[in-house]
Length: 317
Image (cartoon, rainbow, N blue to C red):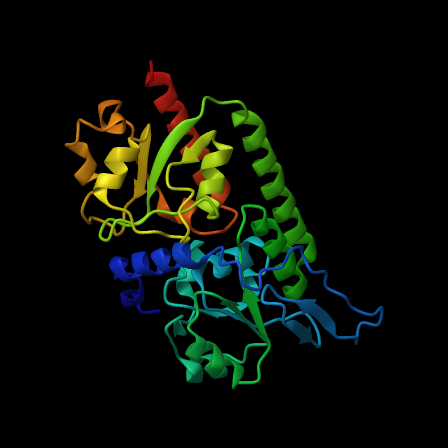
């Protein structure tokens, strides 16, 4: 497997930015988890509505799956279906076994010949992160497609269960979903009643981008007892000015590296002593993979966010 596909960290970071910008898009998102149905006979087809409201019909649980989004590849492995994944997009890098999978391009340019050669019984796609043209090309293959959307922290568990149903690994997926739900509940209980902190969460350095209150990162902040200072803005990932951040004067500023060895994303704030966050040493550099991808590792990323915010509280007067 060519490692060149994994060497361009800036492109991978751009994919992460796209994920943050589009995850949580409200159009067509289901209000509740649709249930899979099947008749008692083992020969009966499996029917399930995906997150775009499209009915998916499989003659049997899929034994060969192609994933075209890193978070979906990760969730398939978490759902016990890793051995059934026969191909993945260029940026699927977790768990380690995912790095060895045949590559089928990415959400902007898929290699359809490679996909067909892998003989998939199911293709899982990120509904809002795959271009309309690429979706049309996939649909032309007449292969079953599952379209995924995730808006809330809780949607990770629902997606694990659906993927488990589609792959025939329901027991493993249910166990993973329950672990995630239990962990989320434990984090909520642990950090309930904390002194509220006002936080600016920076997802991109240039242009300066953040998230609004509908984004799952804002939900993670809320779980930790913090409030997004730009939560009231309308776009899901609004552009803000440095002046607006200075005026908001947050208690803490959080960001993650856009690429390995790249510029410090917090550099612009380190010299601004007029900022409360700078004076308090509350400039937090976080792990993008665990906090920006909607997978079960969100528990890890959220726990780290909460821990770092508690450290900020401990230093406050």
